[in-house]
Figure (cartoon, rainbow, N blue to C red):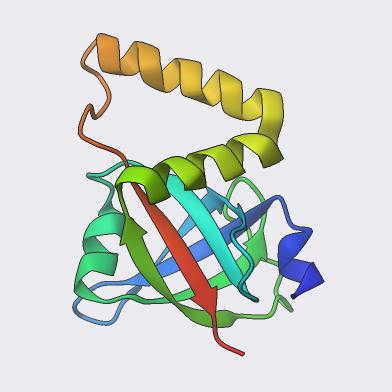
Length: 134
């Protein structure tokens, strides 16, 4: 397990457009399951990163801050992502909630209110599990 990644609060999750252009997004994440180098991310079903992963599961991550600022000497970790729904998506949400605590609860309340007001996506949850290359 990579402690530089595991100890970080945010990572820049890089997905790729059809053109090959990199698209970085700062995300919450946490270790997921028992497999080495496997992590998870919560997201909205209609998020651009979900659409890009459907077309190309290749990803890269780097440790970053909430504003997606990556240190110039940060290591890039390549990997492969997969989209999950149903019980796996619920397990991802629980893992993120456990790691981020009250911050996650506030975020969750915001999303719920947004869904009620039709300002947020109300589609079934889709989340991301990714495994970094050894």
